[in-house]
Length: 590
Image 1 (cartoon, helix red, strand yellow):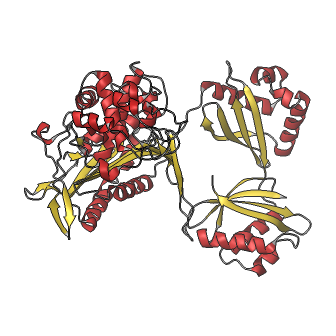
Image 2 (cartoon, rainbow, N blue to C red):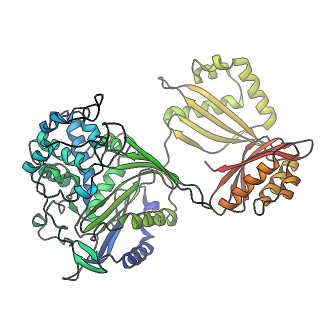
Image 3 (cartoon, rainbow, N blue to C red):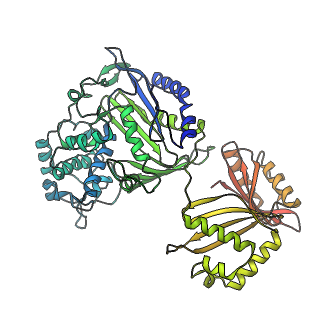
């Protein structure tokens, strides 16, 4: 096991992540035994370094060589991210454009027969984002590592079959990345493999990594195995030699220890900031790779009785990039070849990533990687990195607070944009703020500003009666001024509202028409309400009150509630004459 102690401001989350090491080691060992993996190496990355890594099982069964975070495995399709970095290096240097026709650099593509007369020509960007229109080719692609450059040229000259016109939809293409390897070689004037070694691996200190076993002298290289009738035997294709530029789709050998530097490179691109750039690729280009460029159909969990989860996104450049209900922004790539299976994932907003490498054919690396990630995030209680407000937002908040305390025409003119008093007259704003002070009394700031982007923020102000949620959005002009000011007055539930809310939450434990009739007015759709409550009970279980989020306390209240399956929000409206609810809506907490 290896770990490097941090010396920066990330000490507290780093220490919490480091404390998960024993539990993760046990998790990995159990998984490897259950799946009968010969060897499995893993690592957790945060704060720019490998927090800890380790391994279980054997890199070489016959030699009884243990697998650990320094063992070299073939990482298969995870190699595509190295190809994408190489292309963006050349783009940033002005040596190619992503919208160049691929045939400009690979003449064999000039004679492609497109599927329709209106098809656009295949571009470098199409290849990067899995959008050339060629069919998914994993079984075929797995056997192309040893393809010599001359044979690759003939393959392309013979033509390529289209499944769709380019730039229509996502379809995974190893061939596309094989061609990107050829483009790198043509533009850089050296083989793709040499380019990656000299321009990417060496500057990052990934000097143990390489393309073929004979280049990896002095290193422990995992042998690849296949399960045949319950027995692990060496896969004859596992150590196929990477012969040419086509190996860009999946030929690289590396270790958890060195791949951690690769994951750290992508995590370090977030958030955007001033400062010196890294040695390989500028941060904006690294972030560009981690943005969805070609969407896939969303993945939505529709299991009855389970909370709804989703993943939306698709392919960026050499990486999958998604937004998920569980993790927010999510980036990574898996790999599988004869003898090997691998996976790397990271959460840019939480500054944490996980790598797993195994030496069995198409080993189930994805499930164990996700188990590690979930356990680390939960056990270390990780939260997304806080968005920092722009100085202009901090100043605008201070001026807005002064204006809420006492109206000042000169201050208002200095604070707001040209649209502000056109959207709502000055006199009306002055009256609104006077009424606000009358309702709440003196207001004081409670807590930090919540920044949704550096020029938009929300904060809470508490008064003698109730509180306010204040939102400001600044303009794109220089200097930035307030274009929008929103103020929501919130009051705690009155006695009737509190009673109705408590009765509603109690009904989530055992919904019945009798309970609904007691809580809701006769004019509302009581059977519809009952169906809604039963769905809440089925999916989330009984709910209890956490805190009030909004409403006037008399006719409308919004509350955050706790359930066995996660937080929810409920919005209710009350008929003050009957003291019964007229509506209630539960929704997933935002």
